[in-house]
Amino acid sequence: MKKYLEFSQEVQQAKENGQAIVALESTIISHGMPYPQNVKMARDVEAIVRENGAVPATIAIMDGKIKIGLSDDELEVFGKSDDVAKVSRRDIAPVIASGKLGATTVATTMVCAELAGIETFVTGGIGGVHRGAETTMDISADLEELAQTNVAVICAGAKSILDLGLTMEYLETKGVPVLGFETDYLPAFYTRESEFPLAFSTDSTDVLAETMKTKWDLQLNGGLVIANPVPEEDAMDADYINGVIGDAVKEAKENHISGKDTTPFLLAKVKEMTEGKSLDVNIALVKHNAKIGSQIAVSYNKQVHES
Image (cartoon, rainbow, N blue to C red; front, top):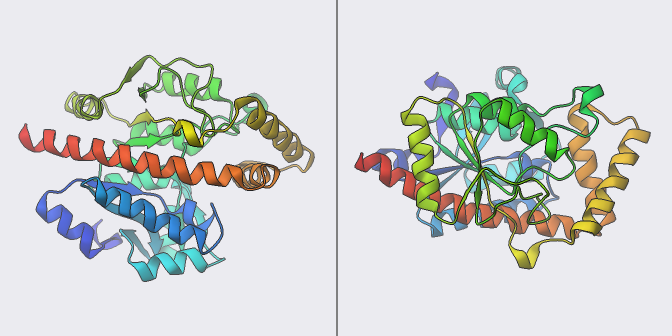
């Protein structure tokens, strides 16, 4: 196992010192936005994690290794390259074996974080059940990973290009807690809330950290979704963005876009139709998630060491 993991010096030192560590994905860098905006965003997010008392571990696959933490030079390579595989759970072994560059999705970042002993992971939004999945069976691997991998995912809910109702049903069936931070409703990525109420919410990062610890102390395997809404000043108007998403979904169907190409197509189309505003919201919510996620990680780390 150890031969496949390579820790950056900063992350290795944090592990030795018993510091809180926050996992970050790399798909948002390689497939989420153009260079150099992607690298700047990644560095800004890492800086926010450090400012809030934790150590960032951006995860990616390079040179036949799972990198737990990237150097500045490695971030540049990822940001500039146009030949980076988008790696879900099924792709991990072949991408490592072939020595290709691989960007980790939510599911894969969870797998790698657990292998590295990191329990807290910050991202933008999770994948879920796609619209029309009752006939296409298009369901993100993120949901199955949440059902089996012991990592808490701090996000702005599920991406609103999805069927949020079916996504919540799937998570409930799999026993995955969806916990709201300062919200009683599932956030819908670009907007602060959806029509779907949450069973549990709190305005305390300590309570969220205690919930993580309690779940795993009880050997209730699987992750948690900690839903943290986009800040009010950055949120989009719900009617406007839902109309845009509806048009993008229709265009995807007309172009026979399916499988893992669906999400990148829809996000790119939404960005185009909102003249880049959706990307600004994406960056704002990831930064906010980094702040709250780091505070949760620090609290969780403290509670674990005190118990």
